[in-house]
Amino acid sequence: MKKPVGGDKNRRAEEAPMEAPNRFVLIGYLEEALPAEQMARVEENLRQSEEWRAALSALQSDVDPGEHSVAQIWRRQRLTCISREKLGAFLLDAMPPDEADYVRFHLDVVKCRWCQANRNDLEEHLPDEGEPPPQARRKRFFQTSVGHLPKRRGS
Image (cartoon, rainbow, N blue to C red; front, side):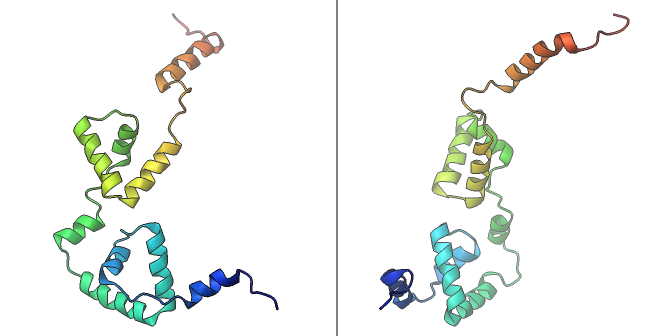
């Protein structure tokens, strides 16, 4: 007899009982504040369970009844998030220590996914250790192009 593709592992996952909807987990899901693995589990539960969808729908009307609280505006506008410019300064160690402490707290303790994504993107564009800084590159370009530029008239 042939075993299904994926073996017993997939069968056990399908037979595992689904957890009941949790208000705090659903709020974290709505605010996109959960770790990626947990977000994926919640999305899977929402796809498979009418109970989860009903709980989420009820929670959405409780959490966001169309009112504008300071907390909701704060979260939606990401007022505590760090600008890309400041994240760049942080990555280059070019900011005051107290600001750098806040950036570290925001990235490592709060674990803001938006700012972590921005940091990761900026890190990809950082110059390599052996690459000269921009001023040195500019000077080198100028020095190598001196003989190729036309001379000024009237000088």
